[in-house]
Length: 113
Length: 112
Image (cartoon, rainbow over all chains, first blue to last red; front, side, top):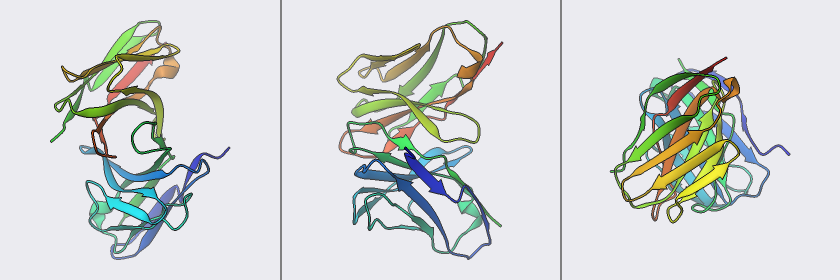
């Protein structure tokens, strides 16, 4: 029973590089979310997806791209990483968008140098 | 714009105490409210979910209440233990939105 997993757990990359963070859930939840957590800003929604091939922007989407070709996977891509994208990234999933808890993965700590 | 505030930012109590964590929100048009705990370097663990039509939810030693009209929720922890030490976050889900809006958390230390 893996639940929701993220990879890698830690990543160091250079400014300008493309990097993809992976998220996988085993519950067949319809909804998946990407958040970033920063000191002084708390947790903020980047993107979410209501189903395969359906995605929408959250509060801070600039500089990020998402896709969802399969229900269980929701990768987050930083097309050209910037230092301001240094953060801890959390993926979450929910059976539906409104009535059930969101369950969070363990997080990916990304450092952009 | 919805704002979620948690007071106090940090709390230190001796083991065995009953304690209350507070969460307030500025816009009462919420769909539900969720309490999480986060251990250092870890993800968030869902504790309780209260729908807007509910007044409280209980799970073991935890009891969460919701007063939607006054924009407040409390998380009551009975007989606190050192293992309860963590950061506790509340988050609200707005009507017609899938976006959770988080408070900044209360960092709890339960001393043996």
